[in-house]
Amino acid sequence: AKPELYIAHLLGHEGEGSLHDVLSQHGWVEQLWAGPMHAFSDVQLFCVNMVLTPEGDAHREDVLALLFEYLALVRAAAPREEIFRELESLQEINFAHKEDEVAPDDLAVTAATALHYYPPEEVLRGPSALDIWRPDVIEEY
Image (cartoon, rainbow, N blue to C red; front, side):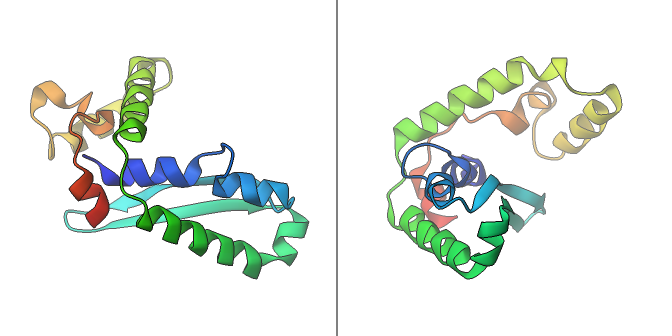
């Protein structure tokens, strides 16, 4: 179900009403991205990264308050299948164009690592695939 990708998609979204949108309206952020930084067998380090404007830097406490407010909204909202399906489509598009950007040595490392989690026939597709809608797993994350 890859709940970390679902949450990253919500936090990194730039549409109307998103965290990025609100921070941009204040002139406080240049870039915002989110996602898992390191993954282990039983835990992940999930990061939210921002490049603040000088004005945003002067309002760091306000930026953090908005971040935690947005996180509370995301946590309170029930997972939505249409968002999952949108993300699923985006992941499939990214996978279809992956060979255009991956260096061979990086591909070898990624494939070898994926063998720990996926059967051989899914080594290339598995890390980016979203096949199973599991709202319970997203809520638990």
